[in-house]
Amino acid sequence: MANIKSAQKRARQSVVKKQRNLGRKTAVKTAVKKVLSAIQAQDLDQAKLLLKDAEGQIARAAGKNVLHKKTAMRKTSRLAKRLSKAVKAAVVATPAQ
Image 1 (tube, rainbow, N blue to C red):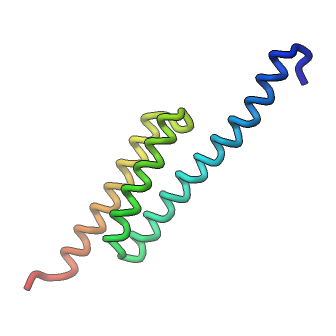
Image 2: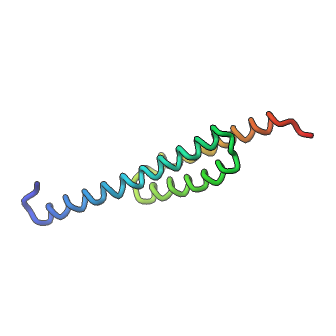
Image 3: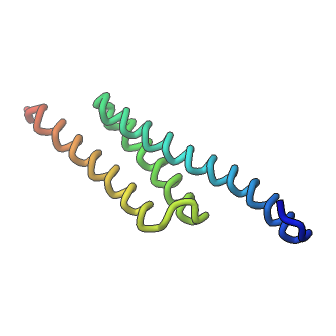
């Protein structure tokens, strides 16, 4: 532990910040998993709603510097791409009448 009073305070603050960041990171992971499970279950309408929520969580984490901005954009892009691919596969699987 640090001896200087300001260094002790920074150490306490870093513990609080670490917990807060861990919570945000967990929220991002959970949101991504929900989208992926909805896509896997072919529940595409629900997946679209969950994707919107996940994009918000990812953007918020990037804004708070929990995730790097390019990492956030990559995650968002890959999720959207996966959903788009699933939607196209569903359209092909159900022939037009």
